[in-house]
Length: 287
Image 1: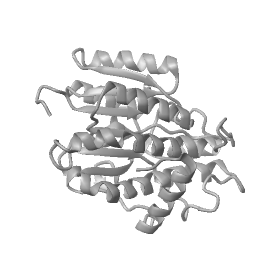
Image 2 (image 1 turned 90 degrees about the horizontal axis):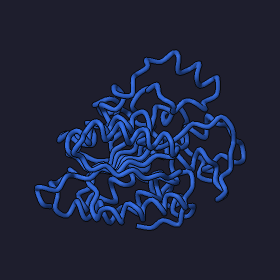
Image 3 (image 1 turned 180 degrees about the vertical axis):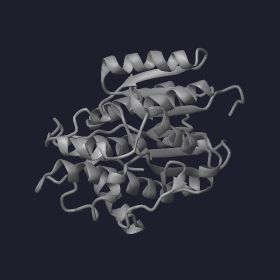
């Protein structure tokens, strides 16, 4: 890599909260940032903030709703047209539903936005990640999945009904998506070890942002009892995982703040492999 070229970060969910603050921080550090958001107006407003944080940085702003696999495929193509290398992919987009919604593609929206869309996008961007890893220092090319302590609140995934369609509850749907984030990072770490690409998952804490704007009242009441972080505070660990030397020395971890955190006991090689196989069936993705 030419030393004059900036490192490239792709950040989903960059229109608000953790994603926006992380994009601003990396841009200020001289990274080229490709920011992806779902809401057009919010994404444009965030883009102005990111550009203001780093006047000379290269900022590209794309729009995609990762609950739709067609959008994941389209935006992957748009990213490929912008760059042939990616140093860090931050799978930060997601959501919390208060009712069951089936997308136009036939998927439960919550699970699709939190796992299926990011799974497909990541697999489609592996050529650019591998290109960067071929010349970058070992452990510096990374995939970080923003998860939640909700991943720890269920015994596991029902592989016979991953989307919880047979016995739907918004809580189980959200927890399943967040547990899938951790399992996905675990699976990526094993599959990409030979390429020198690191993958981790993060539980950032309870960050007060528009992420919870559609959350049900029971969830909002739970949140009020937790220690609440600002987006800047919550983004600290995400930025650290993306840039610090220490996270590059291992792979497949689950972090809270800047420390390794005990993952759900369901996070095993076998379960990560089963989720991977089921996700490939649902998305058509292959690596």
